[in-house]
Length: 78
Image (cartoon, one colour):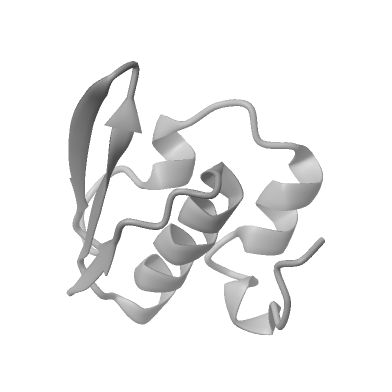
């Protein structure tokens, strides 16, 4: 299981989520939203994923960080 409490932005959460989905690892993500704590669990073999539940990603980010291409990413500094 992967615990993700990184809070610099959605792009990093998408990268972690895609990697977990690709490697078939469960993911538990925690963070804050509008002053309250949130905790989300993603089952890699179940339905739904971070990408499916979040809007606003650019097409470029989706293509770079999709589970089918995430293993090719070497640097997230862009």
